[in-house]
Amino acid sequence: MNTRARIRGRWWAACAVAALLGTAGCVAAPGADPQTSATPGTGDTASSSSPSTTPAPAGSVGPTEQPPLPIVEGPLDERIELSTGFVVELDSVTATAVEAETPGDVSGPAVEVVVTVTNDSTETQSVDSAVVTLETPDGDLGIPTLAGGADHLAGDVAPRASAEGRYLFMLDPAEGRDLTISVNYAAGEPVAQFTGRTP
Image (tube, rainbow, N blue to C red; front, side, top):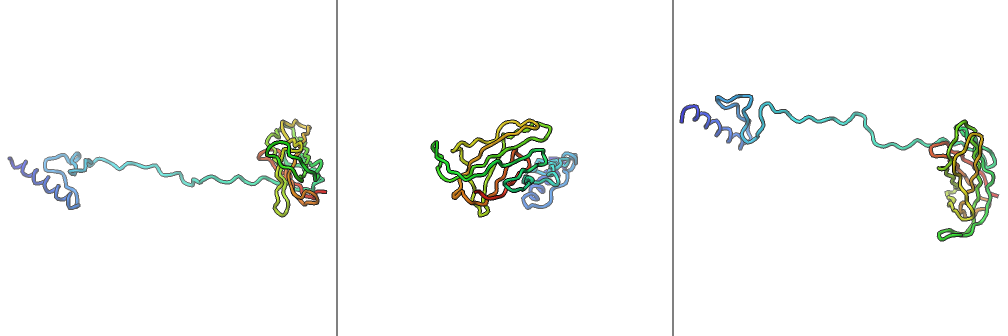
């Protein structure tokens, strides 16, 4: 074995001991190219680099709640004009009783609400997504029912045209109740909110 081979053998032995003891790695072996020499057992060359990572976008946030819809208030017997050009009015609010007509219906006292919406804007608007609700100051909710001939708002309303809907809400008792009736004629649009008392 020549001198160069003996030196290299001793160098590799020293590197193996250093790796077992967890000490610093070895320098390049005598006669080796420093750009391609590797520490035994690692497989990484001196020219290798750490993998890059992409940071998360700054200021990213999660889902947020939709802002509340504007509410325009008025008494039961007045018309409410909305900023969209729609006018909402309650033609009648009366205490009544309904009889169950199909399985799942319930008989009992109810409040009948007849709603008319008029399109005073210059564009046709849909009322297919109209929602009407009824509640009392003490937290009772009118339960919508299709018994008794309910006929909800639906379809498109052309400029200067009107549409009517008839809603029935189970409420016990129904007579002499303070209540709030909210009419949202289309999803995302302002709400007309009426307050008053049933006869």
